[in-house]
Image (cartoon, rainbow, N blue to C red; front, side, top):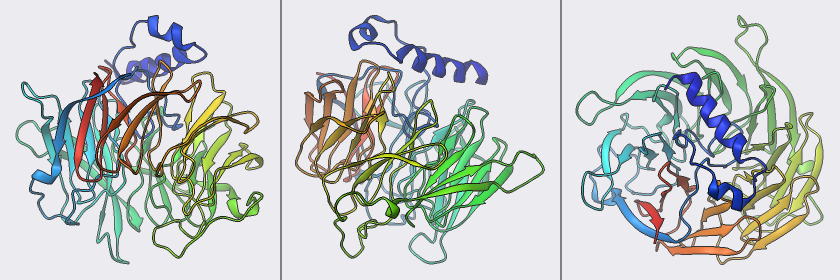
Length: 441
């Protein structure tokens, strides 16, 4: 399948899903496999999968990184907070806090996922970063060196599957600038990779590793840049702002332009934020660790550390805000957008899962639960939502009503966003280092 066809198939799959009822979508033939190529599925972070996932969650296979000796670990922990990218053949790429990226696939026999290859640059850690997969199968992911020091630096790597052995080929790496690299890269429809270093330098990189242009935004912890329909790149920051960056029109110009910065503090809502001295990051109620979700009309939606969820116009103006229940470090979940573009779904540190009307910001339903939701939501093509929780439960619910469809107790906190594979199974990881593949029980 050529690069152009692969992107076309992905776009067609989502277009076919848009506006369809749940019942109708169940009778349609499954789309051609394209995988989950980046964080929250696409460059707009809609969270909409072209596949239907399981309705009765049952554990099929696992991969326990706590049982694997990690070479030169950055942290003595098997913690997994990053989410997986899924290739068209079902291979999952997921990174550990300790600094290793694994490519996992189904085994020839047995109930354990098998490591196809692994990668760990000396002293490097990807922290929260979800990889992105290019049209030719190249895997892009950022790593940090000197991660826990003021001298930390970020780099974006392009990795290709090994011809033999367990070490992938490094096609290239580029310097992203100072600060821990914890943000997931985003790939545009023309193949451009957008990546942000911890101190806020946004880089637009060609698939051959040439840095096309850069722009300076604010400090980033785990947010991923999102791409608007007009090419604007949106970068949220822990410094209290959401940046809208325009690419240069002249290819010879190497700097993007910040056309506006939206300040969350100017719109605090009716009540003060609940704050505490950091850590954790975001406890001061400033900025956001979530990523934007972009609608087809260019509207931008994002939750913030002050527990507000914002609707922002392409011109940087507030359209509405929704006040979630107040809690320290409010909203870290990136919203999913319904197939008919009418409803947004997100989790919060208090109050569970919220479904709000995209046009008005009014609450459609709320699924209350114990614990917090750091996991961004995945939306299956049949209308089932999936999310993890800090109390270790993986939930499936009806996106139309908020009714619980299935509940799997993983036994450990889940911060990763669930990923639906082309075969309809669901992949997620917990903070004790277990990657889980679930299917219908």
